[in-house]
Image (cartoon, rainbow, N blue to C red):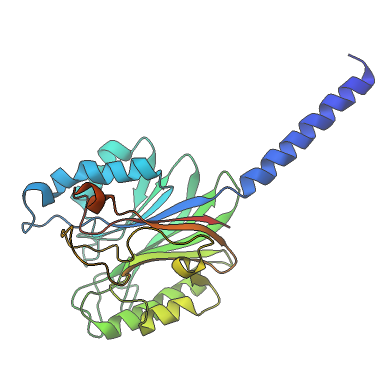
Length: 287
């Protein structure tokens, strides 16, 4: 091999490495928000979790979620789901009760792609660090789960909070939005920030205005570069014929990110099979 040919091979290899590196930096992350409906004696037959579980797993597999912000998931549900997901995903997040048990807002993530660098929980109350605390007009305890991640593919880091606002107290939802922003400002270390959650409120309320108009995040629905698809309302309440209404589940993304697409995955309704009483929401985002 002559000297010039060696130089040509070296230059080609360097160009390929740089090209691949640049491509990797633009690899989208597929974020999902998914209220999975807690186990309850009120649900029987095809609404029972053990019968819905295969459809939850099918949604995750079919749409290849990278990270899932889940709601209404207790320890039994996590264990049951991870029997099938553990080869691909890890999960973290505590329950909302003072004992750190009960339903929570866990985050599932692909272990091959992401490294969880730090994590924690806080409560949506006047005392966020006190487990099981609740304030204002909240009907039950509400929790948020956060993680600091490294994307191994792009080498970018980001901060992510997943939560579930109260379903009865409008004041508590407004205050919870402020708590999310305050905690993100405290913890995110200058990294891009994501929020996901079942926020139990329409897009015209003060809580959503707070989360839409700040220096950290923007609404993925209104920021999508392509027209959002699927139902507007992820919640359908196990009623396949329920009229579509306003959103209640949201994904907020970093201010300077690109939202390639937004989709409410309404396969439950299309296929007339229950995975939950909510449809998952999926966005593709480039940091």
